[in-house]
Image (cartoon, rainbow, N blue to C red; front, side, top):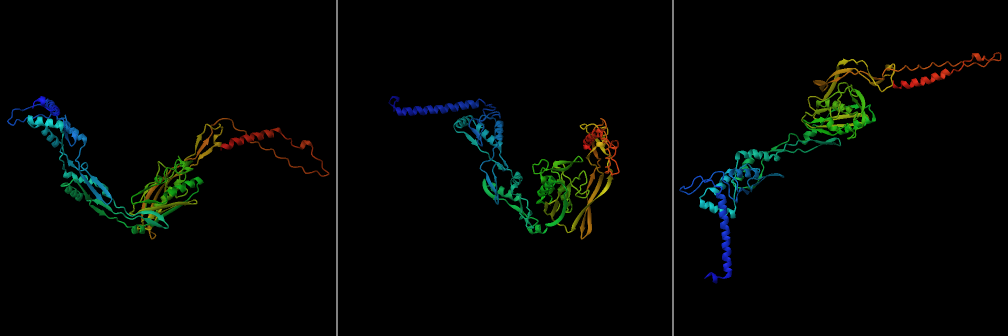
Length: 532
């Protein structure tokens, strides 16, 4: 059939196919020209008609590895791209389970060798290590249908157990011994023991490795070793005995007693586990700004008595110290006051100051310790409950003076804000009362049936000697006039008898105006003496 007699529809179809084929052919030719332009052919004319290329050649358009497009890259650039992408094997989903816990292992968590270089080499071989005809065909095919090269990961067996040890750590659990949770109606509440467990990592490793030989997914129950508790509820209850008690009586102000009650209430109900420490400051919280309800009361600062938030709480810390000593607690940190305290024997006090001085002790027994504390009226009391060793039944602390220091001579501080006085010492005002100094030693003795079985030293104390400090005015001015000596009052004259005559006017003492002036000067003198 001639072109002139051809059906118009057929003619259109043939023309369309021809154009489409031409477009594909042109695209392939351009791709070949682009790709071969980067070639560095180093050996031609071999019997196999195969050529080799240097590592500077780039991958053709349409090549990817594990979904990462490496078109136009060198092998080195392709490696960098794969490393930055942090790719990992897909399809892995292994569930490690135990009771209500689950840990999921994917290809990201498991230790695989991804063999990235092998994948790059495989893609490179496909792209370049072929003859001219095959290469042209592949380049044309890639321009239409991109090719992805998948990784062929292998498990790194020697790294699996360390990795599983890390990943299975949440399944480990320390045994939780029964312990005191509170004191109610004359008895202690005790929590139930919870057994511990430790993952058998060698057995878990074997299970995971066996699964990975044939599967990418699965569920594995984590094998564990059970760790039993060493104590029972009955054991704890039987060993919660009353240990040491101590009480002191307050002579402080209402604010001071308020602060003592707050500190005692904060301590009440404290439970110390074996090896745990008690911190007074940590228990009371900040006592220095009123934020926790503490009020200004008498405190010692720089050897002087001042009004300060939290004043009085040292009596509580000293009372706790007395009870702790009698309860076999290990004293970690303790400071004595500047002055000996009136409410405890010298050498057996424990001062505190939030942020600087703390009182700390530790429970070194194998059982929990419960601390009860409170304030009834003006009496502060503290009682410890816990393990009573059969080696002793009571503990008694004692302290004694090892050195005395005399009170230094009085100090006089001039206050230039006061009016000058020719005799400043005569109007001196006591600012701080001094005292002698002392050094003390202390110990506690353990008794069994009244017989001492051992004695151990306690922290020593140093109370520095302080001088009386007086405030005086600067010297100067004139001496005030002395108070006048009052004139004696005349004796009343008895009424004359009929035979007597009244005295003459010359016998009656006159009233002098000087007497009134002296009285006024005496009042001024009394005003000056108010600074003494």
